[in-house]
Amino acid sequence: MTSILVIGPVRFIKDKLDGFSARGYDWAHITPDTRQDLLDDLDGLKDRQFSAVMILAPNLTWGKFDEAVFSRLNLDSLKLVTGIGAGFDHVDVEYLTKHGSYYANTPLAVADPTATTAVMLILQTIRDATHASATLRAGQFSKGLGFTPDPRGLVVGIVGMGTIGKLVRDKVTALGMKVIYYNRQRLPADEENGARFVSFDELLKESRLISLHCPLTPETRHLLSDTEFAKMQDGAFVVNTARGPVIDEEALVRAMQSGKVLRCGLDVFEKEPEVHPWLISSDRATILPHYSAYVEGIFQTVEEEVFGNVLAWAENGVPNTPVNRPV
Image 1 (cartoon, one colour):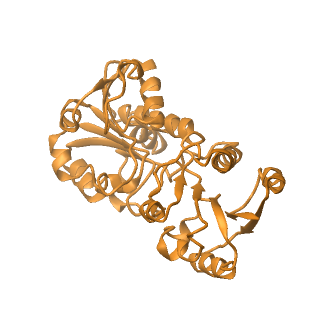
Image 2: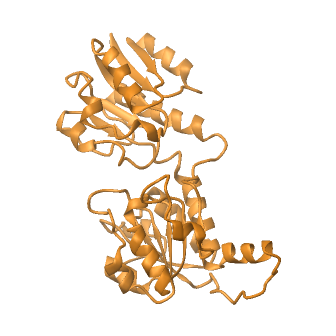
């Protein structure tokens, strides 16, 4: 019998997992609290041969799903790992690829909530909302507040024109903003929807606001650092709902202290859950605690998308949203 290992709480898809028994599958379930619990639980299952693993919680205490985790499974039988979230930097995808396994993410479930959060941060950053709110709460009403740019006509540079980037493009365009974008590959013309493709350097120079929507990879780590900030317009805005380490946080603070970057909006941070003290204290930084996907119904949506990956793989040999091509 082919087995599926489920890691994390099962809230909405137990009946679907039970229904897999009719297809000749069974499933095991573990809910570790810590990384050591995870490793111990896997050691206790060393005699089982799992074909697929479902990761159903973004538990930061588990650490990275890497060789130390996967080597405890029978890699000859493992063909699919799928987990919640659009990002996949918490999984050693290269290791899985070399051992013949897919990794599939869930980019659709979190896409619109993340895009909406990005647009919220874009507007708050442009309109100096955090500063204005702090001034009002301090009993000063509007004392010391100045005029802000009008979002209409403002040039937004989107880095990473995937599912989330496209949604952000459409939402800010509806608000009258102009969009340029940089992506690993230019989109087909009929998918650009008015956005203009530019080089990364051009995007840095032409954008009043830069919004990041790229995955965290070795190539995108510290994509924005001192050199890149120096190329931006004076008084630029930066928004990040992708992954914290895409920005060199110390360099961002230096750029904000110099005025090169006027304001920022961040939902992610380089050393989560730690946040740079200067960003905590500055009313020029609008900050959220990696909060973009926290909307009602999200767990059901992501669980169903994870299950859909397993179902597609069981029926066709390929999950719906693979991020790699196994060797």
